[in-house]
Image: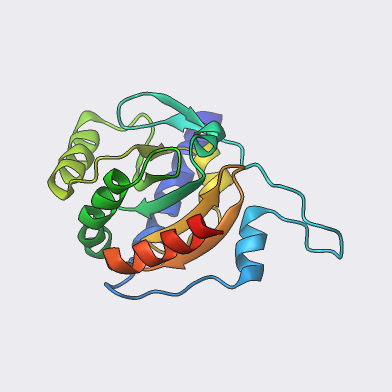
Length: 194
C-alpha cells in the first residue's frame, strides 16, 4: 500500500512543476531569507550552522549519488529542469559549455530532471537522454525520487530553477527562470572569487 501512496504523489508534484515552466529570460534571484530558508539555516538570532543537505538517488547512468557530490567542487550549480520545458532546454547548451570550461574542483553543474523519476520506464529515460545529448548538457543528471525531492526540490515551484551550493551543501543563491550563458558566468565568477 505504501508503494501505491508514494507513487500517487509524483503526478501531483509533476503537475505543480508543469504549471510553473518559466519563460525564457524570466529571472529572479531569491532573497537571502528565502535561500536561507530553503537551505534550512537557523532563522533565530543564533549563528547559522552549516547545513548539509542529505539525499540519495541515482543519475541517468544508474550511478548512486548522495549529498557528497557537492564536496567534489568549491561551487555546484544545480539546474532543475523538465523535458517539456523549452526555456530549460534552451539554456542547457550554455550550461554544458560552462561545465566544460572549469576544473571540476572549482565548479560543476548537476541537473535534476523534475519529471523523470527514478525507476522510470525505458521510453522516458531514452527521451531524457536524447534531450541531454541534443543540448550538449554533458554533466550528471539526477532522476527524481522522494529523497531528492524532500532535500532539494520541496520549495521549487517552477522550472527552470537553478541554485548554487558550496562544498558543504549550503545554498548560496537561487534563480527562477532561464538565463544566458554570460549571465551565469558572471554569477559563477562572483561566487568563485569570494
